[in-house]
Every structure is written in C-alpha cells, then in structure tokens.
Image (cartoon, rainbow, N blue to C red; front, side, top):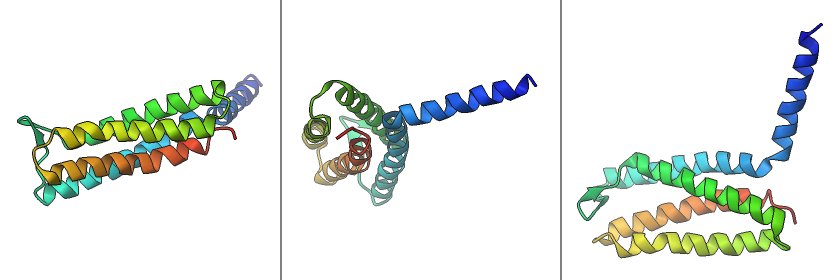
Length: 142
C-alpha cells in the first residue's frame, strides 16, 4: 500500500511540472531542433569548403549546437520574464527577439574575412531564430 501514494504523488508532480512550465519545455525542444539544424547547415557548408576560421581560430561544429542551445535558454528566460511582468508579452517578446537576432548577426557580418562564411553564419542565426522564436511566442499568454 505504501507504493500507491508514492506513485500518485510522483504522477501528480510530473503532470504539474509539465503543465506549469510550457516555456521551459518549448525552449528546450525548439533549442534542440534548432541546434540540430544549425549544425547540419554548418556541416554542409564545411563540406562545401566554406572556411569557419576567424582570426586564425576555427569555429568547431559543436560550437554551433552549443551557442544555439544557449540562445534558446536565453530566449526561454526572456519569454518567461515577459510572460510574468510585461503588459503585452507576446508583442514585446517578438520585438526583442527580432532585435536580439539582428544584433547577434553583427559579429557574423563584421568579423569573417570572406562572404561565404558571413552568409553561412548569418543563415544559422536566422535559422535558429526561425525555429526558437515562434515556439516560445506560442507559449506566451495573449
């Protein structure tokens, strides 16, 4: 009999955490999907001969996944904060996400010496945002 209450408690807790944190779930799932997508684009570009070296330092393929996941976590934190404190959280999130995506592209345009590298880096930023931002925006209250 002692296992039945423990099972019920565990199930209730698991159900509650899944329903109380949709932004967290969206950030992690969209972040994982975007990380896979950006890494695939970078791998294809690397195979095509696009150099990922800036000032002699090569950007590793794993770096694309890591930075994409970090961006998703930052987006999730932003969405959660705006969902809680902003008067128009969806609109505010959309504007902030667009501005942050544009700002994240500035080093990609300014630092690499060749156009192909710049284009691929900007494309990976836009791809990540195209996956993560709508997924998070859907979880913000209207």
